Image (cartoon, rainbow, N blue to C red):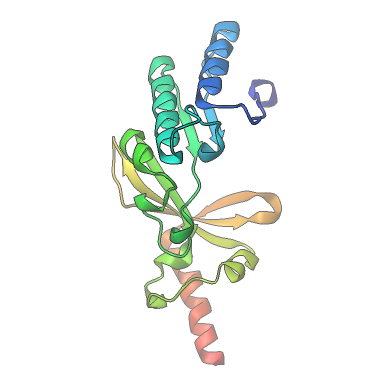
Length: 190
């Protein structure tokens, strides 16, 4: 039902934010429809300035994508990588690689992390990523880090079924109950 409305443009080594801008504008011109644009992922877009730093190029790409969003009155979703030093810390604005332009230009910034980061009983212990990735389902949390037109600091909890690449929303109390039940059970066994 939806497949005839989905267009995938595989990025190549020469795909930049300018390329995305051109393809999107051409799509609107040819079809008369403005698409939602999803970039997977921001930091692998071709640099705008070959002599610029990675941060400068990410900032320029974000600026071009923001302008595209405004000009065509459409949604642009850009997936961003995390800095390696922030892999084992709760998600925040500084978690995003080359985040200056993202923080300034984005209307909405969401961060996805394992729910274990928000579990208050962990006492600043590091999260075992391999252990968290082995869980079925994985307990994940989507945090609203910036929302130009609404609330921030809220979270949405999901069970993520990797085998099916499916997220199922769970009530926060259910997510915490599951985590706390497991911890209580582990404490009794030890």
